[in-house]
Amino acid sequence: MSPEEQKQPTHPETPTAKQAQRSMLLTALYIAQAQYGHLNDEALQRVAERLGLPLSEVYSTASFYSLYRLKPVGRYVIQVCDGLSCHLAGGADTLVDYIRQKLGIRVGETTSDGLFTLQTVECVASCGTSPAVRVNDELYENMTPQKVDRLLDQLAGR
Image 1 (cartoon, rainbow, N blue to C red):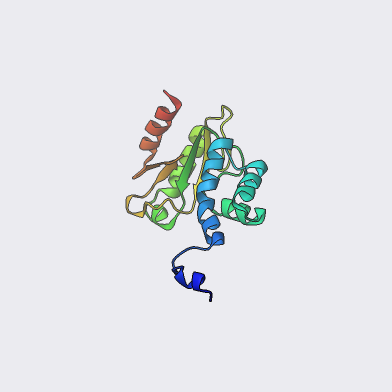
Image 2: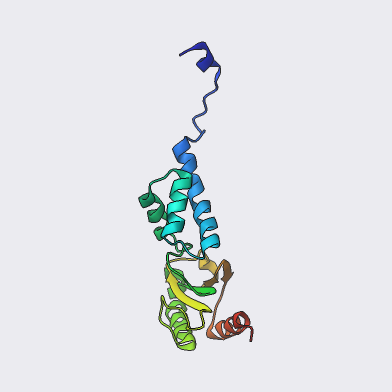
């Protein structure tokens, strides 16, 4: 080791360039989604290029998290928790069926007016207040069909 290298402090906690790129990936995907509306091929390619990561790694990360959308969705994305706690609280299936009937769409579809998209997700991290629904970035807890009615009316501006 040269005298100059000996002067440089080494810290095992200091991330490598590759680790730093990966740590920026979630934020970069979130920003790209906000700019494009969803993560289309162009958005994913741009993130990969900006961070110097393989496109396959960017796509793999984007497709893993329910936060990211790979196809166009409605103005309001309704994600019903389909996790164990929500099932045990008797809400997951009940809420999905109720919303499907109310909006006239199936899971994964968007209403014809482009206002609502219905999805199920494995967990919204609200087990103590299940059943839970997330609309875009807002969490709604202890949901019932009556609360769903009020929420949908509020979102639709009724």
